[in-house]
Structure formats: structure tokens, C-alpha cells
Image 1 (cartoon, rainbow over the protein chains, first blue to last red):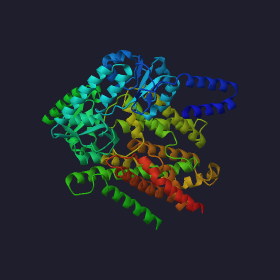
Image 2: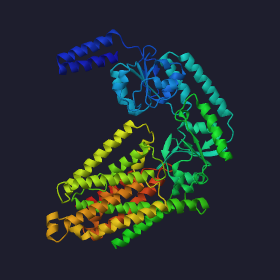
Image 3: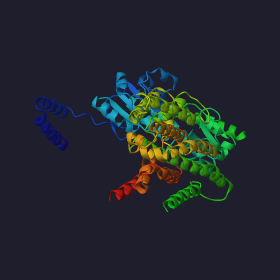
Image 4: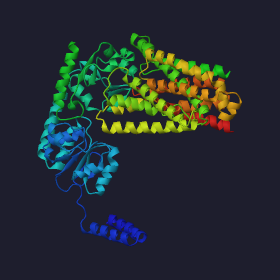
Length: 306
Length: 311
């Protein structure tokens, strides 16, 4: 009641100011608000915004590789009509037209896919695009997918938005159960690992990333697990002082910085104790996490034997 | 007295930077190795780069007679950034790719800016030089943006972090290469100190007073840009030192370049050593970009100086 009153007062002001077109607009708006109030949103996304979707999404633009993979996993892949250029799994996803980048996306390209739901990675950078989509009547959902624990919740939300809740929930429950038992079965870490994703300046992975969880599940420990961030710039001195047994590299073999003189104070670099893994399962949290753990465990064991 | 204070400050800063660090200070082998191979070269490189940037800034401010001139004004940072981003986008691999490609990019920018600067005839027009620097920098930034947008290399973001500046890659090797290289342009600029004094009066008066204006302009421009190119290659673009330190010294010391240049070298080096020590330790184990710290340290000091001078 109070809301209606404020609305009509506000529109009254604009009638005075804008003259005839304003009056027409106000009348139309008032008609809308009085005739049928929009149904209360049933779902709230990971940024706390309601998702204004009255029916299961039929055409989805997925603007992050992790949500694209998740949508395919829960059986909504045939409704994905737009993806980012980084979405490369499952292979069928690459058949979907790309709309470019996922952060700060090209709105025109996204709309050209006529989606009724746009799925974003939860980031403040997308706020203006989401506001624009709201104005155009296209539903938007932001999904935070940084750690393995985020996966069951994200699957549940996307399952509800796409009408595949049954499959999504059972996958989520199975994954959560497997995660719990794997964590319970965890033994004391054998190797202390630093994940160096860039060398100049040195950037390492912290506890905010699923990679730290993968390491723990693979029987190792991230020496930077005291950093709450997903990744952070640090110094060679810090890496040398924490003296990890192994440097985990996302890529191929021994990195070029291993030959630079300033890195020789890091024991693992001096011993050429590098473990390299590659594949999209190490780039984002996915239901393939346990495959990634298996790969990682084997790679770490091989590194230890060397 | 002032010299004693400056030298003492420089020595104290260097000692602090060697003693203080996220790994602490103790006598075990690991820490001693860290101090010898990481902290000492890092502090020295920061000192040399800070001094070089301050000298370059002083010389360029006199050369273009503009108080806003700084070492990166002449399109260098754009060229260096484009070199680095280009190398990453082309997947060039190797331990020295980033500094080498940044250096080549900076040299290319210098060549283009210089060519544009003499386009009006045989004389090097400093106004055209300024405009050419800004334009070449903007063009390089646009090219970088285009490469970023089109290239699928996810590492490009890290090239920008590198360009923000830092001394994480310091080693005895890079210190000795930079010291040997920087000595020549620094001495060349110092030799031109008297001509720079005259140039600040304007090109025409300087000519009447017996300065070889054309030769000085070319020499100082060449030396300053070659010095900055090397600084960018070893440490990215560290703002603020080259802009503010010369002004601070002028406020305290006066305008004669024979004293201004060495004093700026000492203060610039001291400031950057302290800034880097803070960058390493303030939020350890996370390291701040050193340019952030130079601004935090430098702005309040500069405001105090200007207030004192205005009174």
C-alpha cells in the first residue's frame, strides 16, 4: 500500500515536469502496477538479486566457462544459445555461438542470441550490463563459482532456473557427498606446494581458489593457504622463505623463469622440482574435480619419485 | 650539510631495505641467501632506477621547459608496454623475453618520437617532441588494447601487472647490467648541466649566452630516453619519482643543474628503495605494486614542501 502511494506521488511530479508524454508514461506505468503486480521472484542469485524468470529458461546465454560447463552437466546444455570465447568444455559447448568476453560483455552480441536468461560470473563489473538487461526484460543470474563448495549451490540455482532441478540436485548431492568423504579420508599432506601462475611479478594461488582444495584432496598442501584471496602478487623472497617442496605450474614442463638467477634462491627451482598440469579442469571448479585430483596426485607422485 | 643528510638518508634506506623483509632477519643459510641474492640486488636496483628516473625527470623538465614533464612523457611507457604485450601475445618464451621486448618497444617509440620531433626541419622542436610523445604513447596504448581484446592469451593481464612496475626480478645480473648501461647516459646528462641551466631561460637566450642548443637538446633527449628505456625494461613504469623528486630538490636546493642532478639522483634512489621496502613488507606475504607506494610516500612530502615554499 505504502509502495503504491510513493509511486503515484513520484509519477505525479513527472507529469508536471514532462507534460503530455510524461503523463502518458505515468498512466501506463500506473496501469501496469495496478492491473497486475509482477509475481514475487522465486529465486535469488549469488549477489542477492532476484532473478525475474516466470518460467524455466529456454534460451540461455552463459557468460562464464564454469557456468557453461555446469549447465551442460545438469542437462540444460541444449538450451545454451550463447557462450564466451573461453568456454571450451564439454566439446559440444564450442558449437554454441560465442559472444566474446564474459566480464563486461558486449550487450549487443548477447542480445542477438535472444536469450531469456543471461548467466554471469558474480562480479561487480557486470552490474551495469545487468541493469540494462533488467530494463529490457531479460532475466539475469550471477553465480559465484570460486571453490568446490560453491558447485552444489550453483547447480541447485541453475537447476531451478532451467527446470532441471531433479538432475541438478542429485548431481549436487552426489558431488557434495563425495567431497565430504574425500575430505574426511584426507591424510596428513605429503608435499608442500606453491602454485605459481606468473613469474614477473610472482603471482601465486591462495585459499580463495579451488586449486588449493584440489591440492588438499590430492594429499598436498598449498604453502599460501593463509591467503584468503584466490590469487595474489607476492615476492620471490616470500616463496623462498616458505620453501615449498614443489612448484605447481599450469602449463607445460619447466617454465622459462627457472633459468633466471633471482629464482635460484627458491629451493624447488634450484632442484627443478616442478609439477606441471594442464587442462580446463584446472582452470575452473567443475564436477570433474575428482578427475583433476587424480591427475594431480599422479603428477605429484611422479615429481616425488624424480 | 645538505649533502651529508642526503647521503645518510640514502645509506639508511639501503640498510633498512636489506635488513627488513617478509622472511625476517636471521643468520641461517636460507635467510642469508635471501639477503645476499634477493634483497641486496633488489635494494641496489631500486636505488639505481630511482636515481635514474629522477635525473631523467630533471633533465626533461629543463629540456621541454614544462614542470609536468616526467620520464614517461615521451611515449616510452607506451612503446615498452606494447613490446611486452606483443611478445606475450606471440607466445615468445624465454627467461629474458619481457625485459628485452619492453626495451625494444621503448627504443622503437623513441625513434618514432625523435623522427617526428625533427620533422619541421633540422632543429629539434621540443614542443613537437612533447606532442609526438603523447601521440605515440596514445597510439601504442590503443594497439595494446586491440591486442588484449583480440588475443586469446590469458597471460596478457599479467603483462599489465608487470608494467605497473616493481623490482621482483632484480638479481646481481640485472643490477650490474643496468649499472654499466646507466652510467653513460647519467654522465652525459651531468656534463650538459651548464647548458641545461641556460636552456631553462629559453632557447634563444641560451644561444646568446653561448650554449650549443641543438646539440644539448639532442644529447639530453637521447640520453634521457635511453636511460628510461632501460629503467622500464628492468622494473616496468614506476610513476611519480621522476616527476616530483626534481621539484622537491629545486624547492630545497635551487635550480642549478650541477647540484640538482646529483641531489635528485640520491633522493630519487632513496625514495624508491624505501617505497620498495614498504611494498614488500606492508601487506606481506602479498606485495604491493611499488608505484602505489611511491605516490603514497611522495605526495604528502611534496605537499609539505610546496606549502613551506609558498609561505
